Image: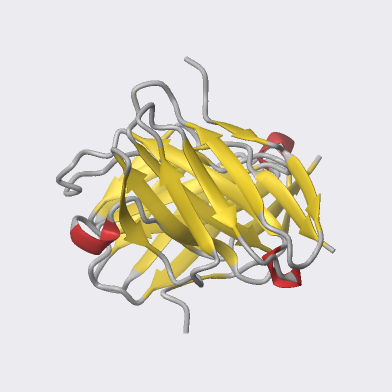
Length: 114
Length: 117
């Protein structure tokens, strides 16, 4: 079983829809939770970062972390065709064997159609 | 500020050959991490270098190796290539504080697409 599970989709929604992306994890040592977006033929770029449990909002994007349930979410409001990409959740612990290591979910392919 | 650069962008090799990929981090960043991305396994951590020292290593065979130079540029080498090594190889750089106890955002390069025939 993988440390981080993410539904690979694909997910197809109409423009303006609210998108919900989710990941579950099994490693209790994870403290940092990230969402990356990856366009075709590009490297991942960081969208949101959250430390421990809680919510974080940035424009149309909201990230939620529930450490008690080992569950994280990303919500995209008023989705746009330019949001079409692969969304990857990533997590890391601190110190020791976690140096420089992000553990990723499989990625969810999102298509927003006009 | 220039981003992370990787060369070459595309590479075609045959089984049994070896390959060297290069990564130039963002100026000032001292940590470079390498990842392999495949459709089946997703993004998997290979190793991380900080100040020319490998601090962390993922679960890959010894055919995968790397190094980092004094200017923080990094190379990874794959020897005796296998068909299953076909993947997008990504490097990411960060400040990489020596204590490792705080969050360091990783900035990814565009990747090197390796095809093994």
